[in-house]
Image (cartoon, rainbow, N blue to C red; front, side):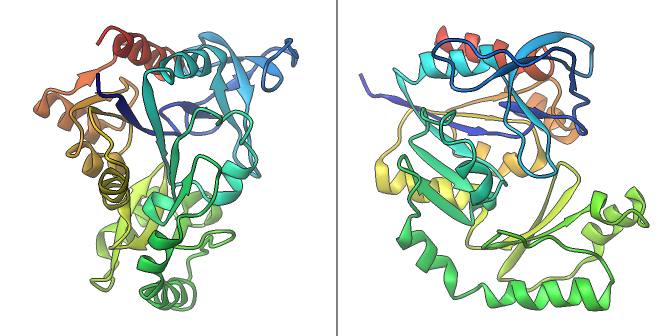
Length: 280
């Protein structure tokens, strides 16, 4: 039997954010024997309680449910796992102990690939390197010309604009920036979790996944996601699952394409999906 492969987004899919998903801590940390980290009790946006691991990094308060990790570890016996995220290297570095199930990691929306030992794929890095100067030009224009604060800290192949870093700007200003910003053909732009990411056109989640499929022969591909920047990689999948708490545009596309949409939201949604995949 050919081993299957998960390609799964992380933020908003496997884990959930204090601000974006209204997760609140309601219990004290507990260290269980053999657990990879302390667990705490949290509530999601619906007020439902879950035991979760605090995997926060920097300004981002992020939580991964105990049950989600258990299901992933169980499924990892029969599937390869590729984590596909907009996060930067530092975020993965801080979570290595929890990410022992990963066979590959696509970071920065395809701007970096790591293997199971968290080593950078040098061939992919060299492929992207020649176009990175275009990011410098756009960064300068955003900062000096349009007066937006940008975030490049620790990012190797992304210029990120976060609405939260620009308190004087409205959500309408942010959407207008996305809609009207003209960039070179060597770059693409994508929205994710109220972040505008300017990425290399050679990168992108879908291009990085296609590269891994070619290099490693990943078969029987299952995609899981929740946001607009996941839609492009879904076309490479044999089966697609999206959370009921996904972005409205993703839910519209899921229904149009016949993707599986979870009835549960947030932590319940991803756990429901993982349980459903166990039945495949």
